[in-house]
Amino acid sequence: MSIQNNLNDIKSQLPEHVTLVAVSKTKPVSNLLEAYNAGQRIFGENKIQEMVEKYEQMPKDIQWHMIGHVQRNKVKYMASFVSLIHGVDNFKLLKEINKQAKKHNRIINCLLQIKIASEESKFGMTLNEAEDILNSADFSELKNIKVVGLMGMATFTEDLNQIEKEFKLLKTSFDRLKILQTANCKLQTVSMGMSGDYKLAIDCGSNMVRIGSSIFGTRNYSN
Ligand SMILES: *Cc1c(COP(=O)(O)O)cnc(C)c1O
Image (cartoon, rainbow, N blue to C red):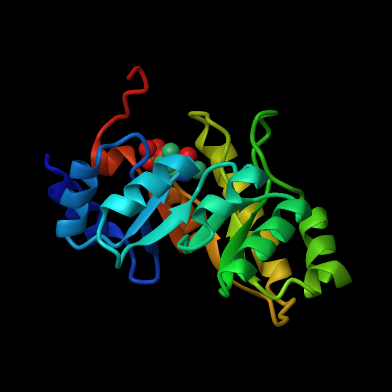
């Protein structure tokens, strides 16, 4: 199957309210262009340097999403163009994003990453930590960021019951936090679901799925 066919196939299965982020990490620009020419305009990358390089080479009407773990000292490289940062999991990072966004006289949309997986290795904050941040006076002073939703990654397991439980936890967290509407906080997006579990994620309330290998094929990390 071609990238175009894969894309059309997935899009035909997504409900209208669900946004598709095409995860193009490790893939060459030629692959991204194929998706672009098939109509895709939202791309997700997990490394800032790689996203910057692709941003420079690709058409300028693309929305670039940073879906990976973000190191504070690298925020500056993407601050001029990034459209949504999914993996925000601490207040210091929010502050740095705000600072860099201000330099470019813009507002950067962010998702708070909630730890829903039981695995030790997954990043993210607890619901209570997120709630504390959103309620804090320090947060209300960040005028150049806007928290527009939550992001989560389920445990890497075959156990669909466990994945479902974790997705439902993210949706419950979203429902609880979305009542906190302020100048820089209005939760609308629930980013959860990847190639292997996006249908389940949508059933559990996702409205943004991040799909890589089902569009671009399996990734080869050896080169
Ligand atoms: C790689 C990645 C994806 C896409 O994974 P696939 O299984 O290839 O669809 C989604 N979200 C994040 C955070 C990723 O790093």
